[in-house]
Length: 161
Image 1 (cartoon, one colour):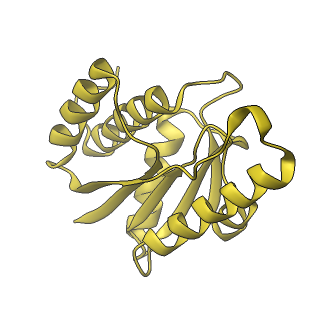
Image 2 (cartoon, one colour):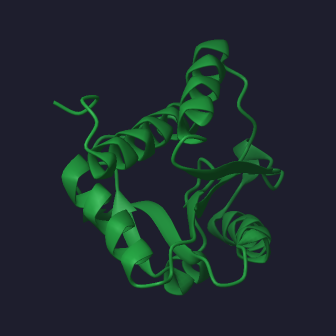
Image 3 (spheres, one colour):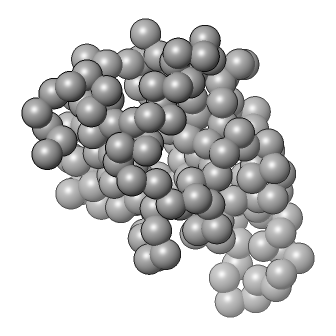
């Protein structure tokens, strides 16, 4: 069974997002070992934050993300400049990884400032959820749903129409 980890910077505090994530987390257990790792956001004094301060915070968050990736897992960075995929393409990516004998994946969602360049460079692939901007809590919910959809597609279930 594949190990799928979702590494997120920041807490999930919106009740509707938490309920949705919990539901998809429960559903995913039928297809994979799914685990969410929440990492703390590096503190930034927003009003005085310059580029150097933000870069240091991103580096700290990036180091924590990279340290959290399971050995042998393929890192997938979610970032706006990544490749946009359809649900079917995501399902194919997951299936190909499993068939190639490298099934474990770690999806990384950064803080509101994004992901550190080191995370993007270490990633096997960078994916984008599209050109729209999503709050990170909602991005987590959407990713959980899309992972469930991808596994459902690969299993031939009727969830995906």
